[in-house]
Structure formats: structure tokens, C-alpha cells
Length: 268
Image (cartoon, rainbow, N blue to C red):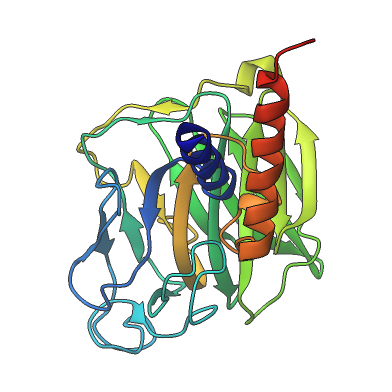
């Protein structure tokens, strides 16, 4: 019974929290490095100005205390810092000699607060399998412009808000991609075999191979809680999704326990 309860607890945790390969929280509120909690993609500031508007509100570079919430719904941890991009040439460089291996399924998510969506690069990953997301404006409409290994689909950025915090998620599965805003599906499309993967990015020392917020047509606004997962998450696993209440977790565990006991019951 003890082993069953331990297994149940493990399964509940796995239900609530998916594997993470990179997670920049921007909680440092100072310094020249934005640290990745996994140690894979520590970010270095490039071209940030020491004063406003590129310097954020806590001093040198883009550190800011403007955040989407006092805590992260999925984990419950405190949230005190973000990064302010002024729309110039600044970006956070994530390039190093560590390999980033995402395969055919992954999720890239973050909280965003855009000032101006006109040619604003959220992130770009290279070399090898090119992957990027840009938000642009044309004739009064906002668009997601994407790059999947040279395949460049675009879609209306339905639901995008200016000067408001929102959660953005790009989910890639075999043969298709989906974009979510605040957990609501905003765009989706199929991908041909030529751009389906694997999305593996070998480590290099070249500045600008992996970037957040630029570098060309850089992001204008705020970014917080940048997380890359090595699987296609569902909206209930995104950072903006609240963790199950204790009662909900207990019900999940009880259901799993009953299932285990039912399967282990000898037949008469």
C-alpha cells in the first residue's frame, strides 16, 4: 500500500508539472546575466541602454518590476521581475556551447506585454533548424509570422492585446503547430514533412544564434517567465494555468489509486 501511495503522489506531480529544458524567470533584477534555472541557456544582455526606455525601471539594462502577477499560477512561486525591451537594437543572447534538443514536439511559452507589434521578434533559435516567432501589424491587423525550418506560415494574432500582460505559448506537435494566448487557441496550422523536425540546435559560441526579443526588428515591450518544455503541453500545463486545488489533486490521486487497486485485484 505504501508503494502504491508513493506512486500515486508521483503521478499527481507528473500530471501537474511537465519536464522543462530551459526556464528564465528574470528574478535577479540586476546584473549582466539572466540565469536559466536549468543552467542550459543563461542569457546575456546585448545593446540595452543604462537609462529609460531601454533600462527598465530598476537601473542598468532592462530589469523591471512590472510583472503579470505576484506569483506564477502553475507553480505558486513569487514573481518579482521581468525584462523591458525598448524596441531598439537590444536583445537577450542565449547562445552558448550547450545543445538545445527539442525533437518533433515542444512548447515555448512566456508572458508578454507588447508596446508596439510592428515587426517585433519574440525569439529566434538557430543554427540548424531555424525557429522564430515575430508579431507584425498590417492595415490595422496584427499577425503571427513564424519560421519553421524555412517554412514561413502566418496567421491573424487573434486576441492579442497591447499594453496588457498576456500568456503566449507556441506548441509544436508532429505535423502541426498551435499558438495560444492566455490558454485560448489563437492560431493553428499543419506543417509539411520538410519542416516537421527534429528541432535540434547545436551549441555554438556565435552571438545572436539564439535570441529573446530580437535582434532584427526587436521586441518592444515586456517579457517574463520564458520557458521551453521538451513536449507538447496542453493549456492546463501552461504557466498561466492554476495548479489543481488540494481537493482536485486528492481526487486525481484517489482515482489513480482505485484504478491501480482494480487492476491488481485477483480474478475469481
